Every structure is written in C-alpha cells, then in structure tokens.
Amino acid sequence: MNTDKAKYWIEAMRLRTLPVSVAGVIMAMGLAYMSHSFRWLPFTLCLCVAILAQIASNFANEYYDFRAGLDKPGREGPRRGVTEGDISPRAMLAATYGTLAAACLIGCTLIFYGGWWMLPAGIAIALGAIAYSAGPYPLSRHGLGEVAVIVFFGIAPVCLTYYIMSHQCDMYVLLASVSAGLMGANVLIINNYRDRDADADVGKHTLAVILGRNTVRNIYLLNGALAVALMWPLWMSMPAAAMLIPCAYIAMHLTIWAAMPRRKGHALTPLLGITAMAMLAYSLAFTIAAAICFQ
Image (cartoon, rainbow, N blue to C red; front, side, top):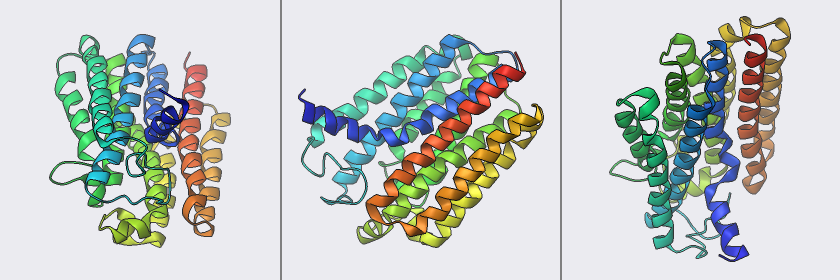
C-alpha cells in the first residue's frame, strides 16, 4: 500500500473520534480500581474490541452514506475517501465487515471471563455498529445517532468491561456509563452541528437538522454538565483535590461551547477533536485518581 492509499484509509478511520471508544473502557478501568477488581488481560481485550468496533462503524458510515447518495465531493469535515474516489466502494465494504469480524473474534475470548451471555451482548454491539448507518432504519439518518452513541459507546463499553473484570455491576457503574455516553454524544453533536446544512440538503435527518444548531448547541452544554453531575458521588468518595478534575473538564467544556457559534465549516473540526480528547483526558484522570485513592 502506497503512502497516499494509507493516508486515505487512516482518514476513513476518523482518528479524531477514536478517543470516544477508548475513554469508555478506561473509565471502566477506574471503576474496577475502586472495587479492587482490575485485571489487565480482559481490559486489554475489551479495549481492542471497542476500537475495532468503532473503526468498523466509521467505515460503514462512509460506505452506506455513499451508497445512499448522502455524501458529495468537497463536503465539509473529513475527506470521504469513497465519495472522492480514493477508495473503491468494494474495498470499503470489505474493510467494514473484515474489521467487524476481527472485533467479534476478539470479543469471543471474553466469554471466558464473562460467561456465555457475552455472546448476545457482542451480537447486539456488532449490529449496532452497522445499524448506525445501514439497515431499514439507519439511526444516524433519523435523529438517533446521539442515542446510539450513548448506548454503544457509553453504557455498553463501561458496563460490560467492568462486569467482565468484577462480575458485578451497580448503580454507580451505570451512572458512570451514561456519563461517558453523554460525553461521546457531544462529539457527534459537533460533527452534525458542522454538517447541518449539507445533511439537510440531502435529506439526512440528524438531530441538528431536526432541532437546529442553537438547540443542539444547548444540548451539548447540558450533556457536559449532566455527565459530571452523574459521577459526582464517585468524585465525592475521593479526596477534595480530585475535584479539580471535573472542574477542569467543565472549564474546557464551556470554552468549546462558547467557541461553537464563532466557527463554521472546517473550522469546527478541531473542536470535535478537542471534545473527544477532553473526554479521554477526563476518563484517564478519573482512573489515575481512583488507582491512587483505592490502591
């Protein structure tokens, strides 16, 4: 594979968004430290599954949006390799299901740690990765993309990863998983906020198209505040110095929210990456704090 081809495939992976899948698994790591149940091998396997599932979902989004005629050359946001002719549709389709198959194969090893009920859970995640962009009712085209992110990049990775390591799951874990999902949904909100006009032109009914930019921007603000509030009991169980972490996240969150209306088009893409990195930094800081406080 030449350098240009590799660049097109890396762009199709949407590296700016991958912290979303990583952050959920890392948050489960912090929760496992709090219950003294952390184990490296199942954690690593869950991390691989999460990353591969998100890459497969990103590939599927590019292929199925192209097939539905929803992408145009020169669109705002990341370059679409299939639409621009850099990657053949056949190659993208093969990459989508090949990557998803790799995620499923690694996921099957988690049956050893979590039991056979991991199998239907894994099937649901695989179907969710495709249903976001394909099927009779693609979630991303009917205002349900953010809901899908909350479920498949928040609740699922946090709760399942924690359960696989600890064989339990309580209300605090569920609240943390919703927190991760809300942060992840904010990444999609900025993406759809940026693409609102182009999506409306082709009949793609994202939340930004349905509700308008101002409303989804306010949802972005609410999501960040609610995400921190849901985890407040966990932060309260740590020394006061740990409170600097959610405070720093809120400060960054407000900065991004304030910057959104001052930018248009491609200028919004860096805010998408910063939102994803803020989520990852928050999860990492939570995990480090938990490891220190509950060692």
